[in-house]
Image (cartoon, rainbow, N blue to C red; front, side, top):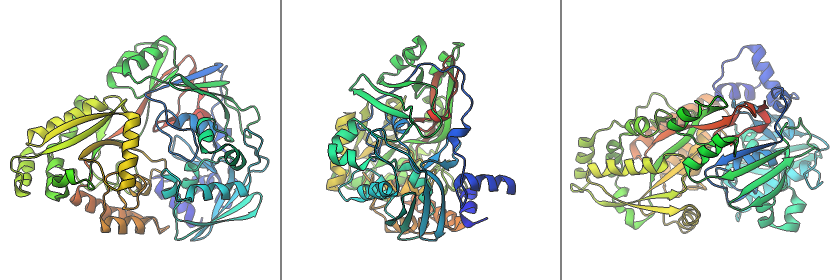
Length: 533
């Protein structure tokens, strides 16, 4: 077996027999052609004609290269394909690429499927892969993909079905990064422009875009010319229900078939209905508060002792129990729980209000100080507002006086972009959530905490953090990466740039009379893996 198989076996946390590893190697395409997960989807019964997702809010774009918001992620996964596919079981499978392998430490080769076409008839080939990477790497491109693909030095088109990716340094995550990188059609975008792609997307996926009626629904229909097995459902709808009660009510009345982000109370309620059930995805999404470093108004927060004091002030275990009803678990450190690179030996800050007050006094704030606390609505998750309020209450108990400001979501997105562009940072503390499809510390931490991170809204800068993040992403050796991230965890623990917060397993309610087997990862349903009643 080659080093790539060893890497993925360790990185995915699986211990396998030689036979299992050989099978996994085939799936990963390590010099072999792997069978697509799509062909392994469970046999479906008589499928419903349509399936309707209910989310908290619509996304702001359906451009396959721009970050999908919660709500549009599931639709994006249905409309677009990538070179690789990551299943709900965190296994990497062939997608538009039949196989892949590392030629050397800095070169990956992908063998592409032949005869694939976009929904508008454009051919998919190696030139398209090169064009997609070039678009993403344009300095004007917005979104985290530019940072994700920052190690790519060049793309060589060997022939129509072979592409080689050259990197500036060893990058073990290239196969996963090309799951995150959806393929869009060059001619369509060049003729129509970015705005049209964002509102009328074209991909190669199992569903074709039909329409987007703002604040009503997004509709897609089955792609009858799809290169892989076709999903049983003919049409899929996505609807937004900003109010938790209306979303759950819509599931109970049959207006929607899948409801995102349920509470413990919701689960107790819907499971009393014999036709409904709940599905809990892997714990991989953070719900937390973060500290700003760029704003003059946040000056007290620049003292490490103040940040450490606030970490002692928050009783996250109480929030997890009393607000989330056990659906959330405390995240003890960074990199977070469930991600490769997490150090389980590092203990969380204990809830200790006296220690918090002592640290504030030592920092020159014996009477506390006033600080802005930002939230937005509609929230990303159920119970978000309650969490932020409880967080503010714990700060108040040690003398820190929160000034809560709640933004309308679109205004919040604009504000985040503005402070990032101008390097001013937020005015104090702000709610945030994060998940990354790589399940790797690089995907979670680099964008948020590296000084060049695409989503470093806090304007956090720590040379040691930059050094360790750069080091970990520049080696294929699993043990070196683990040791580097363990060192990074200690730096984060001491510097306290983040409140760590809670990790959630995204919970979906679904109608069993339509969905026989539910599948999802994070915010995203996996219709390719679902079976229907």
